Image (cartoon, rainbow, N blue to C red; front, side, top):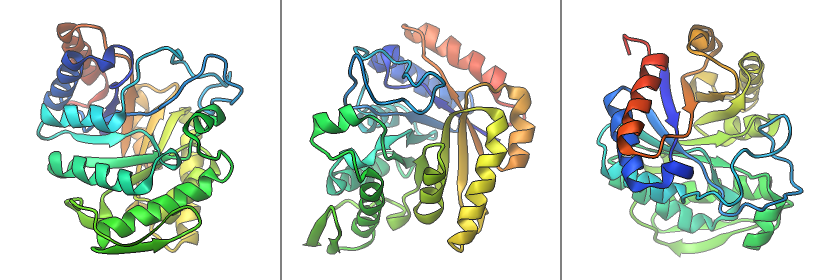
Length: 289
């Protein structure tokens, strides 16, 4: 069982010295991947419901520092050499897909092929409004943008015509080191997210999900893969648990989980951050890993 760490980019995790300490310690202690999420905008009193908590509220204060995940992971890439990197997740419909295609390929090249692009459709109408992007239709926009990005990664020159984006005979370089198959995982716990993962992506990332819900979510993912003519084993399955413990790792592996992602906030100093990562590794990573 792979174990990832979702700890960069927010609060103490925005400090360069803490990012460096967490990243290098995570690599040294056997974490498989560093995850970093995104919000461009938060508001003090959102009307939108946060889908990953029982009370519908995000735990991060609106005035907290929150780094751009691609930039934060580029910094982490520069101080490591083996640990993988992933956005968890980048809110794809809020961005220009041509720009994201270039940014993702750039990070993949700079990290020597260690990058996975995790994407989501977003949940905050206030954030979309601030960015001037329609909230309605964001799911269709997400699907189309991913298809357009895969076109850009695979073809040179590339052309695409869709509902939300179009380009003709353009060259966007560099290409990802793995070409059009730069790994893309879809975040979200809904049936819609599972359908999107099965239809278009290379994996699924369930966030803040109860242990008891994981087998049922994977069963739906398996059904969606069958509908799209794909073996479920083609997709990776990463989950950040809301209530799990290391004792659940064997049953999660049996259910089909390939990576458990530990979510936490690092302490404020590099030395404390190294100790924190070390303790997490002792708790979560089996000795033979």
